Length: 450
Image 1 (cartoon, rainbow, N blue to C red):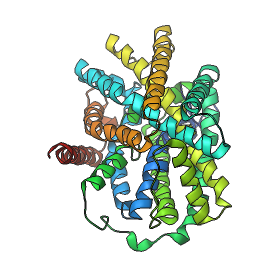
Image 2 (tube, rainbow, N blue to C red):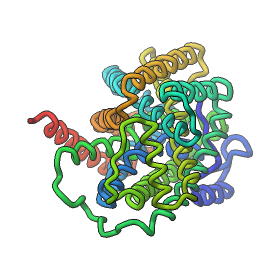
Image 3 (tube, helix red, strand yellow):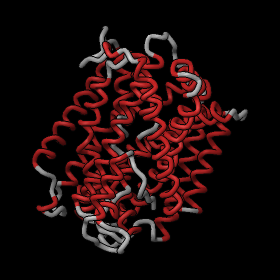
């Protein structure tokens, strides 16, 4: 299973370590308190800070200045309960969120399976093609985007096959640290060029269909797709098994907030970078992955100075490679556990993917997803924006459904009364579900209502 411990989003992690050193131990002597639980939140950051930030948040800043900053913050707030319920359920029950779906009925598992199949190919294709474009632009690779995409996926699969949880822990920690520091540095360079008069509750100008469609795509992966909440529950269990430390809800909450708040702040950084480097320039993003990546880096370098080119290139590639790595693992892992849940319940003592049948399902799913994603890339590699908008909009439309399943799971009878979410969080979850549902219906009405 995936593991992520150590490293951090700036000083938050240092603070968490200080708290952990004073906490009581549960499990191995070297895995104490928050430090023993720390990991899934950072892994969430690695998965989330990708296309939603580099592509969509940059586009938001480039086109609307700071006009969509409030929307970015609201999207993070609305989805907060659904994401928090993933690790919360895992800690409270010592089982994955998919067990919570199973307890609601086979229909819930089937619904999650359908939503996963509908999104998994386009999601992996979108994050991989952007990463390939960056590799081509930054490293000067002469191969086609399809070939580079295949190589990136192969590297990720090989890392998972050879190093598994241990290697992934080390690699992702480094990537999160690099992308955080380099993004903060690039944002500092962009700040003096930002037109703060564009900051508003709503973007100025008419709200036409193009704006609505872009907002749907932006919100779809802001901070990420709700699917990742299932992955979070699996990563929480993996971290617990790997460290020998059974985290408390408070420790898990600290880990979650480090990753979630850090992810939201990095989204704002990319909006600011887009606004500082591109707003008002009249530049339009090209459709091909390589041209898009090259133009973004060049625009930043032209606006912020040539010295910013390596910083931007490093930040962008670290952002995207970490996302591909987690997605290549996340979907197959969820599918392997999903298939097992169709067969029967999950027990608190069960370590996922230890069983041979689940291992086989994981690798078969990984191969199928990777081949499918490469097929999508082959068909749409010259239309990057279309592919990204398709993947993010699909996640936007499925978000309310998965949020409902998460809400029902965390309030299920298997969750001890003392471990249930506080009333304010339950109300916030209901509000988030309603807001997501209304926006989804509004979007469908605008797109198909004539």
